[in-house]
Image (cartoon, rainbow, N blue to C red; front, side, top):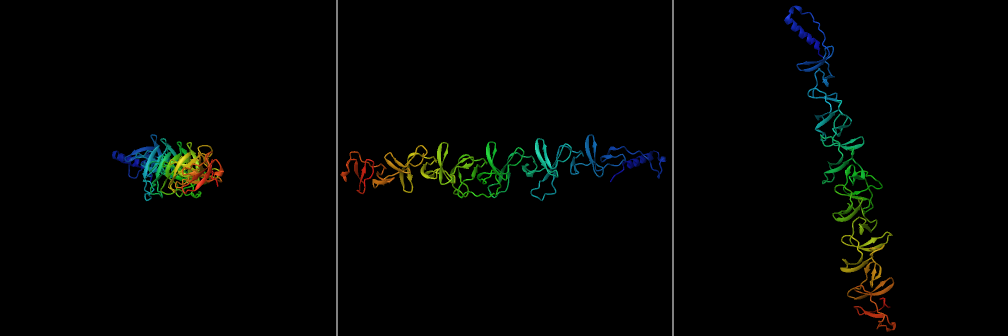
Length: 452
């Protein structure tokens, strides 16, 4: 309601003059006074602004001493109020600039996700920042269409940002761990990474960050075994379906607990559904991928040493049948440290409960493979020395169509050039008789070949 300050002035003046010179006025006469000039006037209850007609100005902005004030519907200076959902006046009625304001959130308190307070920011022109980013004192904030500062994880213009906890609002960059529900009761939160523009790295394999590589699915940093999407360079989604080769580790990568892509040796459990459960195996990773045989067991060189790995990527020890590049196979032996052994090796055979002597190539393309042939007066078949059983003392061995006689130490039994067989003297020199534990007599020549 507008009030005529001029009328109040007339009434006040008439009352004063009647007290001094009452004969000048009568009850039915009206005094005529000049209308007050437009401007600010101070009254008992505060400042008001009158127009040239002497009326209180209402619902309008007016400036005094360089400061803007809002006159409400009664003409009084509004205080501590948001005006037109755009400006704010403080306890003195001054329109604020570059000013943070928090307001108790009364509307959505039934929602568990609703903030207790709503934050606004009024810029240099006094207007509430809305529907845009604003850089304030070196930090970036985002305000929605209502002017509310957003917090938490937010989707803005097709990108995901993290704007801090309630009451914070600062756009984050770098690593952020967020507490979130998970199917795994031991998993209480996930790590996310936001680039220099605050954008979350959502689905990316082997993103290089500070010299290390990380993989993200739906923004979540991956740890442990991760199945790569087939024929893709980026992760698709957390529920992507894959079709790995049954029982193999191919297509998997491994990431440490801190998310870094694995490199080098690790003693860890194998991938779920691939390796035996609750067992630790030794793996070697290059660029996150485990060395693993395409088929069977294959040999790989690590730091100039040779190691064997199966299709599950598990390092092998002991006697193994390895698959060669051409698809053929060979015997090989690997120590407890996994390193391929060469040369002469004495190896315990658990099944036979006995020690056996083997020989493996020491160099060349066949290095580490079981030796096949005669060397050092012994016969080796795919690496295994052919020995007579101890209780027989000697026994015949057929090697490449020829029968030789060997003792329990694998030595080929040979005749001297001057020796002669008593059983068959007609053979002449260069033969000798060898009796085994069963009193059977074998006749051998200077090469150890059994004479029939």
